[in-house]
Amino acid sequence: MVQKIKVLFLDRDGTINQDTGSYIYTREQLILIDRADEAIALAKRAGYRIVIISNQAGIARGIATVEQVEDVNTYLNELLSVENAGFDRCYYCPYHPDYPHPDYDRFIDHRKPATGMVEQAIDDYFSEGLVVDRCASFFVGDKMLDVECGMRAGLRSVLVRTGHNEEELCIKRNLIPEFVADDLYKAVTEYILALV
Image (cartoon, rainbow, N blue to C red; front, side):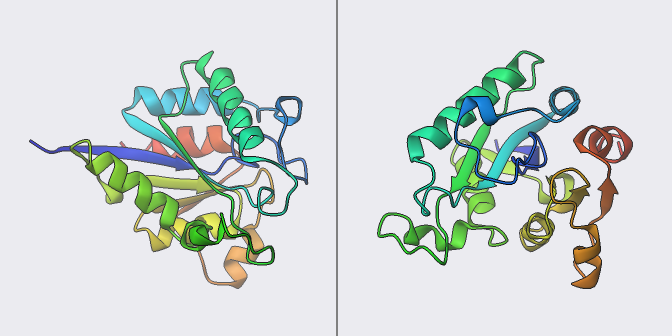
C-alpha cells in the first residue's frame, strides 16, 4: 500500500545557515541561523520529511569541489542532528549557465527555479513506495527563485527574510509566496505548523 508523506523542502544558504555572500565550501564557513535547527526539529516531530534543495554553482565555477560541498552538507547534518533536526535527503545542483562544463551541463533542469531537484526527490520517495502530498508540502527559501521553484512544483511557497530577503522582488515579479516570515523558525511556528 502506498503511503502519503508531507515534505518540508528547504533551501540551504540564507535559510538554514547564514549566507556569507560567497560560496560556502568549508566547515568553518557554515554558521546556523538562530533557531533554524529548532524549527527543523519541530517540523520533523510534526511528521514532515526534511529535504534540502540547493544551487551550488560554485562547483561549475571552479570555486568549490563536489567533495567540499558534500563535506559541508555532511557537517550541516551533524550540526542539525544534535537537536534531532537532521535532514532526510539533500540535493544540490552544480550547474551554472555562464560556466559550461561537460560534467554539469546535464543538470540544467535542476538549477532553481527549475524543479528538477524537487522532482528527483519526489521520484526517489516514490521508488520507496512513498507519495509526496504536494498540497501538504512546503518549499521555504530566501530568494525569489525558491518561491518560483516551489510554485512550479505545486508546493506551498514560503519566503524568509534571512539571507537575500527578496520580498520586494517577489512582489515586483508577481511571484507571491503564501507566507513571508522573519526566519525559518517563525515560518515553521507561525505558519506551517499553525495550519494544522
